[in-house]
Amino acid sequence: MIHDLIGIGFGPSNVAMAIALSEHNARVGRQEAVTAHFFEQQPGFGWHRGMLIDDATMQVSFMKDLVTLRNPSSEYSFLCYLQSKGRLIDFVNHKNLFPLRVEFHDYFEWAAAKVDDMVSYGHQVVSVEPVLRDGVVEYVDVTARSGDELVTHRARNLIVGTGLRPVMPEGVERTDRVWHNSDLLRKVDALEGTDPRRFIVVGAGQSAAENVAYLHRRFPAAEICAVFSRYGYSPADDSSFANRIFDPQAVDEYFTAPEDVKRRLMGYHGNTNYSVVDIDLIDDLYRQAYQEKVLGEERLRFLNISRLTGVEESADGVRATVTSLVTGEESVVDADVVVCATGYLQADGLGLLGEVAERCHRDEQGRVRVERDYRVATDPELRCGIYLQGGTEHTHGITSSLLSNTAIRVGEILDSILDRDLKGASDGARPVAGAAGGGVPQPAR
Image (cartoon, rainbow, N blue to C red; front, side):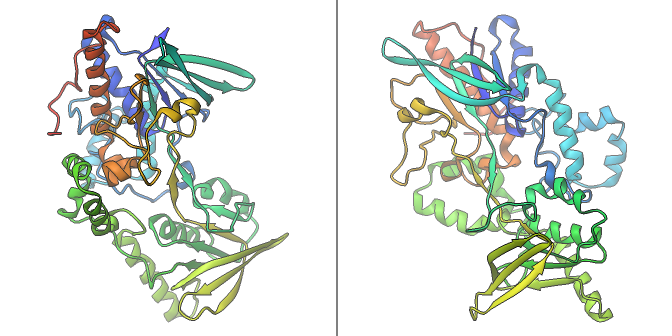
């Protein structure tokens, strides 16, 4: 069997892709259905599980779920999830656009389970090989490993959604006592009953502030030291006009903008997403710190205008070196654990593609060239479509790896695949897969 589409990774973006395919296939019927399969190396669906702190909320509206902006009547929406759980009225009465992160993760699991016939969990993709016919790459063979077993599927199109990779400070490695915040909840349980004395949390973004608040609450006898290079946490700009940077139309504008305008837009609006914190959390932390100062029981310490420059681990703790950016003075801070909330980098979307990647184009800065429909620009001899979900910030803007535009993005990718199938059919290359579109009016593109 030759699939119309193979997906690498099954996080929220590719779950949304599977849903769009399922809805399309339900409309057009079996004869015109798009066949697809996804490989996910995790044993089941999981989305930043180590960061699902019990009181942490989403930073995007629940309406920016996997489907609503593409198809408001979808049965896969967050509201349908709430109805199935018997919480719809309770949520409405809550008068809140931003659900708990734990709840939204449960929604993702609920949606992923509805399309799990399209995914093989516990399968790590190990190779992507070109399949040539008359000198043209018509298909790719995707091989995945599950235990000792290898399976290979062939596809006309490939969609890569391999997510983000944790970043540590330069020269610092992850150990049993030096964590990335993505491991927080998985590792923190092991500390129960050990009476930790001090934690160091490095970073100035939302995750760092959430980690500080969480550890302060969970370990009431421990001191929490926050280390960051600013005077304090900077508030996220979530004002109505600034939020237009996340609109579908903003992708069109960013894609066509000159490079210098792209840089300026990211500079203007980076504070909507990067290294910023919800103002309510900032206020809560400051209020707590001031209260402790008044009472003479300071457990929150903020080592600002500083950075972590060294870590030495011993059997019973960690010795961290913190350097002032102003004076260069070094301070030694002993702790039980260092948590690095130092962000993520997008995985190289072409990293798994082997020989296929050699036929993909890059710009003068070594970045992947991506068309407006999220298809990688390639040599003419590579007819198999390579699509990216993530890793397109340089071409499509700030929503490249964010939930804000996921529903629209997968609809556009599906339209592209169907449109290329129609063109291929007119050339006698293959049967038509189906009529184009996500089935509802789309924003202008």
